[in-house]
Image (cartoon, rainbow, N blue to C red; front, side, top):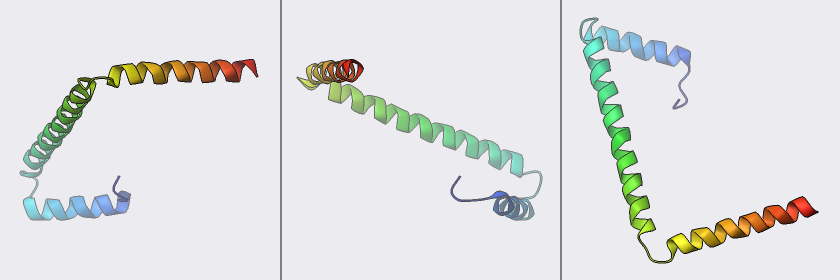
Length: 81
């Protein structure tokens, strides 16, 4: 995780505790968790939209089918060896 070990995380948490206090840390953690979840959802939505756009391009589905058939033929060739 970002090259941080246990000692580094403990120091970061201790500094955060000193700066924000014990009462604010749960609120900050909850807000940070919501922000990360929202960010991941946004990335997933962009990826899904990109895949949808790519699949709408003529010939992409056919090319994927051809690739799948080629892979099956290669696997069959490996089995027959």
